[in-house]
Length: 110
Length: 499
Image (cartoon, rainbow over all chains, first blue to last red; front, side, top):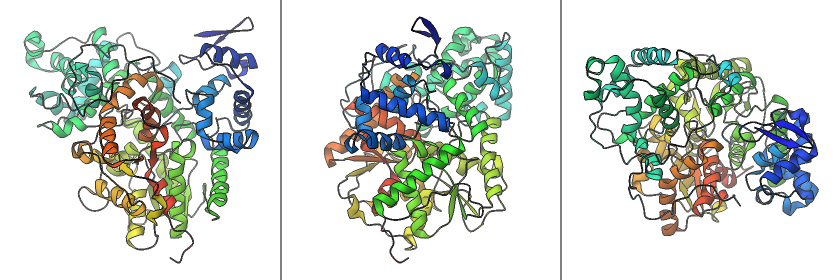
């Protein structure tokens, strides 16, 4: 599978995750969100940016709790919950947001 | 909340109505095939080999000789039909190939054709068939619609274990280069990084430090989450989902509080940062052993005296039933404790000895039921008495919570229904199967909820917890109604008292 971003054709796996993390650019997230009929707000971007920063340092997506805590600090305590993250990313924050951020899909019993 | 699915979710309806038979209703369901690199990392061919038919038949012969149980299972079915309405995937889909007998027959007909005298000479008379591409496709689809939960085997008068048959079929498919992506990619991560998630040591350390801060903030107690501490008494081996996902992580906090309050020194290992052992799901003894050996290596390296398993269903099957064979002898551990020990046993013992105290009023906002996880219920035990795997978790829950109610008797304990996501099927490409297969459990939960206003269902398996978080909303429940047993324990634990 491939997606078209700014005239470039980028390879993805069967589930739409970017094959090469280095090919990510912000418009990748916008295009992927468009496929899911989702429009990215500033709060969506807070999550995506945090995921990318965390991945750069730790080579893995953050635990759900680490993510909710970080978002709570940035956007206010009422938004630091799984419930809010599911409102933003109804397919599940760990999976849908990782995809838009160009990260590999978390595997295992999650 | 969760997005609307692109398949029809059956109305929860009345309890356990056997569905009308709908041939091929799940013939479209199959998981992604493993990529070359996932296959080769486990010692399997990267893609379907040219002479797959010959190799598959030879492998089937090898397995029936190696595992005599498998041959007995393939030989002894009398088609009595007792199993037909016992599988949650049949009850949820109506596809007749999800009747356990039909699932077994997919392999049995090939066994008969190549390994029995009547099957060689009069195949049509005895239901024997050649191994064709069509048969291989059916294997791939329907052996990935079995969660190896073994409920059918409880009702089979011959005790035929469909899980063994499905494990053998998956091993044969791996051997010819047609493996499942979800399981095989994950096993590869355990071989390189030590856990299913692919969580590196640095990230694990950071996550555990964060938990110490959280517990200190929430409870005012400096509970530690030690990593790679040499000389600790207890090595905790727990599913990596406990570090990552919800509601799992609240269970991990519960274990840590128990260790803290009982004054036990413990540690997690970055080398064996996974209890799960997906080698079991794919029927690969070699991969199962390689994963299990990491636990031995970590125990020796850290010099611990005890090994304790966290809340993970099939890990406890592998731990309780096979660990000594796979990775023993464990004569370097303290022989006063079982090797390995389940966290439920640890907490139960500490409660009995009065070394920890629970205040059940802390959970008075909850009305709780318990989902017996299939591998704990039907493939292991806890404590010293038969049936301890049913009694101990319930005693722990009742000590932590005043309002406990069981679901109806033919859906719990030995007769428990799989959550719908076990056996290596907890993957998004099988979400339709997972949702439909959860139906019998959802019906029983609905019934007990209506009778007793249940607010939460507790479980002791990472797969069950993730599966229910995902499928509960499809049936009108909330995703956070599934919780860890040790979340109840952690919330009820009386901290900082004399002990």
